[in-house]
View 1 (cartoon, rainbow, N blue to C red):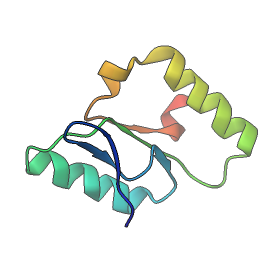
View 2 (view 1 turned 90 degrees about the vertical axis):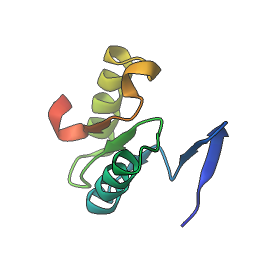
View 3 (view 1 turned 180 degrees about the vertical axis):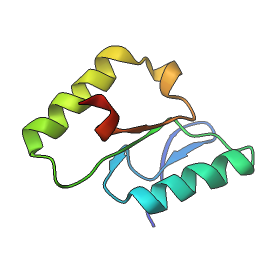
View 4 (view 1 turned 180 degrees about the horizontal axis):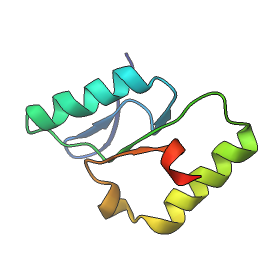
Length: 79
């Protein structure tokens, strides 16, 4: 599994994923172990690329980086 360091003590796998089950487990493990992450956005592959982009842009326009800290957002909630 690749990990990317994006700052002191901040490691992410990737910013957006369709691997909902594993990344939600990762989020749960992080919070259980008092570790932090910069935020995870999870989606489903049944959305067109345009729909995925529209939903991602809604999240970006609505939530700051600080509000995403240690949070999980589902693209399905941003329709």
